[in-house]
Image (tube, rainbow, N blue to C red; front, side, top):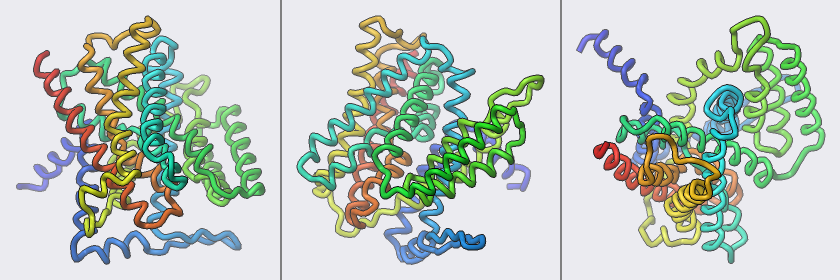
Length: 393
């Protein structure tokens, strides 16, 4: 195979809407293989490799795993902030009629999985802390599988899935900010708010330089990192503050940054995060461990809670004439989308890393078991339903 042919194959692959989801699967499998092979030592050394950045008295010294979870994921959340802003102001969520069904679905898709998890884990205070893990949807995985198995599904359903995931991500951000904040540094919080005010001034002055927003966002990230609030929130705030439009010009800083960040996030940051957080040792693991309240609650929350919460609340909204069924779709296709939303994976892993940060390695391992089983079951059933419906159309 020539160099030109190889290059064209790679270009076609990365142009696929499903490519990001495929890379996440590859990263997850690679992490598990390394963790359960003679390479496990290298895998651990790679994640625990210390990386320090120091400017004068300010020093940030963390293992590479935390740079991934606190630093690179802040870039991912900045992209989420940018996309939320674009969709709310100019995209598929700019009118109340467009927002209502995915919003109601997202509320049900957060509340019901959390209720399922809490019902199973109510007796244990440590276990209860993981209630938010099954509330998340991994849009890259879900959309990737949708495009793989049902390319000719109505566009309205794809938009519904994307819009629901946007509201889902917004709720996840609020959950992280409110429920997974530890000891607070008032000084760092005050400084971070000064940074937010700086972003506001840049926005009101219609500053078009993306670099200016990124520099202030970096200052906010450092302050938030030191404050006790999770550092990824700095990414969301920065993304929301970057202008979507400017007077007297067609240039959009927000759209330009979305275009630049998307391939780095989809093909770099998210697969790296999946690789760093999916390494589960199978030693001593058996199916009976899945019945432990933590993984069982997560798996049940993702697989049953998500589909019941999303489909049930959407069905009720449509029957009450609050919203309409997505154009050109049917109930079974909507149900397939609801099932697919049970793929929590990267977002669930992220929340799990916060929920059980101090719970010990055993807790972290079994919560990942629940995430993978629940996400895999949702992916398989959702793919079967949507493939069946796509073949019927």
